[in-house]
Length: 449
Image (tube, rainbow, N blue to C red):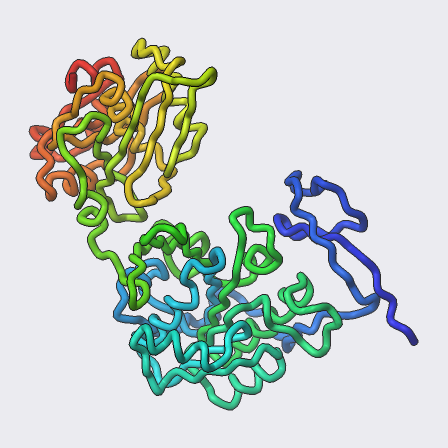
């Protein structure tokens, strides 16, 4: 009997299936998120497991597991202290960002007897060249250029590794599924089988997956609900810095990040980000300010550079590098309305030094100070730091972790620390003498200009 093949459309954003294509998903409302998928009529999922009788929660005994840790604190911090045995981790990022490189480095530093690295994109000779460049020659790492699911499961069963890496999950295919490798069905079904293998054998399984900036490729996005932890390696190929961020973690916090620097011999952890981001700062230059950002539970100081100049075109230019463009537009409007700065005829450029991308509003006061400094062409005090969110009516609002931010500023010799006035009620008495409370941006400008 001939197999019937029908075409459906799969939403990479919410996971729903639609019988016909439309530019907008009717379930989640997102645009351009539907991908075409061929489905064999009557085919069933290849994921199987034994049926178990339900038990009461009080009778379930907790597992006392020991995490598998490495010598790279930046990586372990993001995971919550290391890999949990039996867990499945997804490491995603844009192609060429350094996912395969960092995984080879981490495998060498992990504590374990045997690791399996499956590569469906490179030959063993290519992997050897990379390992040689990185200075990796570990007998515990077994390399296999296999991307057939059934063969991968056999190798895992025969070698009993502590950790298995699949690079990348989009290249894995199963003989029992007619769809091409990389399709939604292949990725989802193969990942499900591998997940069941990891749980039954109590091994750590790491999926590496490529994803575009919009997250439109079938792969990481459709697996986020399936795995235990989702890590994203962020950065720019033209920039030296990489940020490892957890957006899902069943065994730890999603607030932590790891910062790495791309060097000749791979990715090196940056243990003190403030030293890196402020090491080349030029003092006594108009438009330069310093703010304190929290990445997870760790504060670090960043330099904000603003440039305000007369526009030579009909429409003034607005350019933001490192923050959302709409936030820059909002802060410019606040400066115009609440501080009386005539910026409608000015070109405005903003840059967070080091290629960082920061979303938290605690750096708003630093942005305001930097732009005003450039407009007035008046340098700010070289030892000043700005901490606080700026609202639409020009008020400076409180931010979390204020004491940690203040202590980090004092640690690096910054003596003039401007914070929201309401935060003075919550900080230690000893710190009150070393900070200045700010109620609004007009109050701020009276203090710094």
